[in-house]
Image 1 (tube, helix red, strand yellow):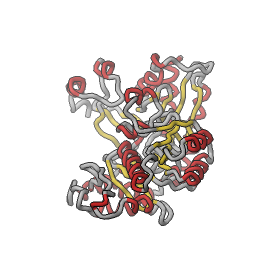
Image 2: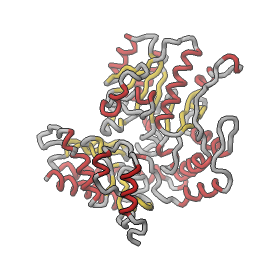
Image 3: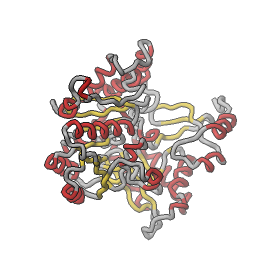
Image 4: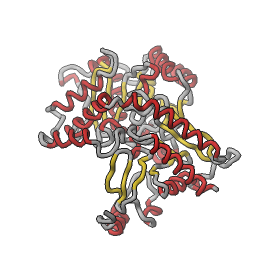
Length: 432
């Protein structure tokens, strides 16, 4: 049925009252927002009955598709029990089972503790605060610094934003940051750690591929080298798998490709299959035990959120992890990764496609002038191509002039074909 929602009235109300994230609002308020109404599998439908491929998994969150019957059933079943209880002073079965399920993906006695929060930023925030307080409790109060990598993006709360290396997002916060050193490589990291001995407590990385930097993969072996450097210098390794976790790279977690276990693992986005906000910070017994002691010793980790360990989020996250097993998601994904690689290769014939970067089921298509010169940012080429792609049945967002293609893992080969063809048509439409 077409437009039973009164799309014009909804658009008018949105323009009058809402403030959207990462959105130039003057331009938004002058346009006609896309109003989405329902979803099925890898597809989304707007209020006027048009269907689109969810080409960036609803900002990198959706794993098994929209309206998945197993996830829906898990939510309904939990609703019949309780929707939310405080995690401060009480506990509940879904959170206990989820914590056990998460740590069971790693070697025994490695990552053993799970701290629940709300989103990727708060997962990083928890890890950073744990790392700082650990050093204080160990009698190393000066080791409050962090090392992050050029182009990093780890969230928008103040601590997580301190790690960010993208000026467009983080420049307004200059002067309000944790102490952070930024480096381009492991080699530069080694020098930084030597030159600042006794001041740095942790290194933070998006493993295998950086997301908001424009989908830029790290070289093979880099993560294992980084683990060795951190071990040698007794520096914590914090891995941000908010984007890469839950199958995106072809393994359940990106760090498993190089058999690396961090000191902190930060998860969010796909944790609930894209259904509800929930995040987790996994850490070791070494970290956890430093916080043990009588109350008067002042070792308690005083940090948390009202919705930490929300039962609905934990129940649907458990169901999502079970789908990985029952539907053999990672096995089924391997030929799709090869198919995606092949289809993306067909875009190389377009003179404006400068580079295609891919890691598993994560891809970025960078657009430039045919000679390789970058477009001026004010031309907003990436945004215009994504808008044109919408007219061909594909929803995605750019990172400047890099187009993200990252559909839900349930996508079919024919849907990948349609999505890549929509991109090709949109690039030709905008750039000729």
